[in-house]
Length: 115
Length: 115
Image (cartoon, rainbow over all chains, first blue to last red; front, side, top):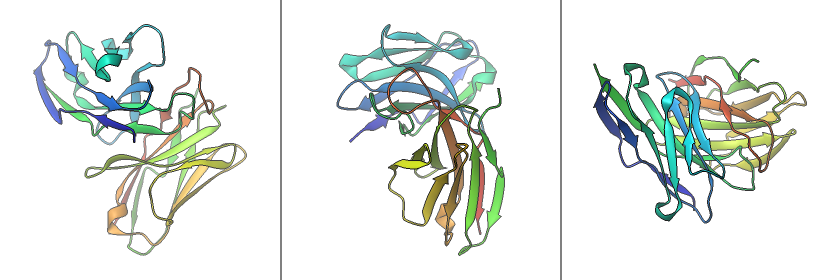
């Protein structure tokens, strides 16, 4: 069965510091991979996605993620965090070759940014 | 281009009642999926509709149902509400079903509180 693991429930960083959020997945083949961000009481906004090709993908708001097949990981990074990045971040996988309507989500990582 | 619209944004219902939530996808999108988000269970897939047909269904009781209309708008219904149904219900739309470079766009959600 597919599963997505985000090992860190809560991360706190200082503004201007670098950030890495971890994501590991369990899936029979290389899935579609996504990172979403959610502000309190809001829906999910897509930060970036990996479908194929270059394993380092760039997203919005200065985020990037690297797909590592050997480690079944898709970690999210940002070189310098801004206070407005405080939110909850979700990693998700979708079936390759099937509907993109069904996504499997990790439990999320809550990011707190200290000024 | 308008995003995914969910109505209403907030609902308070009494145990035993039923509720209907609405989702209008992005124009041209034919796939609509529904997710339930709770602090305890995280984001869980409810079902997906494409061209008025349910294509996938998550592991929820039969009290949860949905439908999609010819204009791709979707509704989900929960009958005989239980306290545990209190959650943020998120709708996502995507351009097509199947592979290809598409992604899911989420609405702001409907916050359902059952008292």
